[in-house]
Image (cartoon, rainbow, N blue to C red; front, side, top):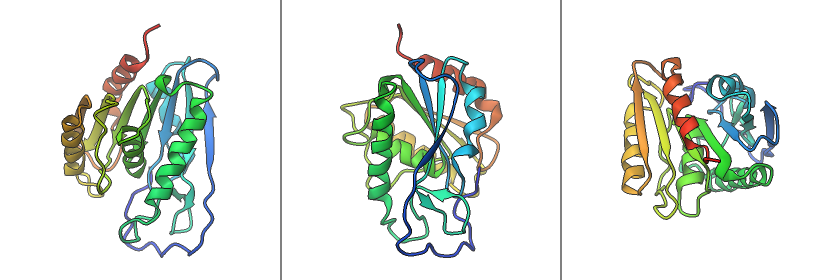
Length: 220
C-alpha cells in the first residue's frame, strides 16, 4: 500500500489524460462481489491479494485502478491531493460512480461490498454514502478521511466498518473518528476498529472484517 501525501512528489503534468483499469480474481457470476479501491500512489494490484484473505471462493474480487497518473511518475491517483481544493474530485467522484454502476449490471450492487484504503476509502465513502449514493451491500474504509462538504445520505443508510491505526502519520486517526461521527448522524450503522499501528490495513483485524463482510450479503 503506497504512502499518501509524499513530501517531495513533483506537480502533476497539466492536461494528463485519465485512464481506467481493473483486475479480477475468482469466479464470475456468483452473485457476490468485493470491490477494492487502492490508495494514492498505488495500483489496482496493490490490494488484490487482500481479497482472498477476506472472502470465500464463491465471491468475485474486482480491484479498480484509479484514473489519473500519480504526480511522482508511478502509481495512480483518484485525484491530485497536491492541488489546493482538489479540483479533480468532482470528476473522480462521477467516474467512480459510473464504474460501480457498470459493475452493477453484472452483479447487483446490493450484492457488492466495497473496501477502500486511504484515498480509496475516502472515494468509496463519498460515492456510496452521500446524497444520491449507491445501494451497495456494505462498505469498509481503511485509514480513510472525509471529503470537504461530504454529508451522508440518511435516506439510503448502509453498514460501514472503519479501521485506522492510532499512530498513523499520514492520515490521522481523528479523520476516521470524524467519519464515524458523521455517518452515525446520517443514520448509517458504523463501527470503528482501532489498532496499534500506522498507515496500513492491520492483519489482526481480518477476522472482524471477514465477519462484517459475511453479515452484509443478502440472505437467500
